[in-house]
Image (cartoon, rainbow, N blue to C red):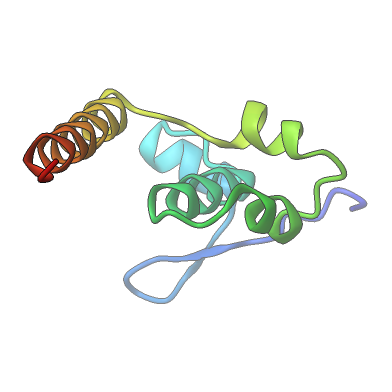
Length: 100
């Protein structure tokens, strides 16, 4: 990019902020690519299919999407386990209550 600093945030006053200026002011290194990770993770958390996320991110391999862009938190794990156990309990209850 020939050394150009491309701003991608605005301050509250509407001043364009570059990545370097944000780092100086906040001490946090911000890169636009992090939004790609966040977007993919949120799609997955909302139940969007992996094949769709793969296509949305334009990955040749679905494994790239799974290995690189999906961030599963402990809360995600707890929620999924709870849902699994609830579904399993419901299925067992239904099979035990069926008349013979």
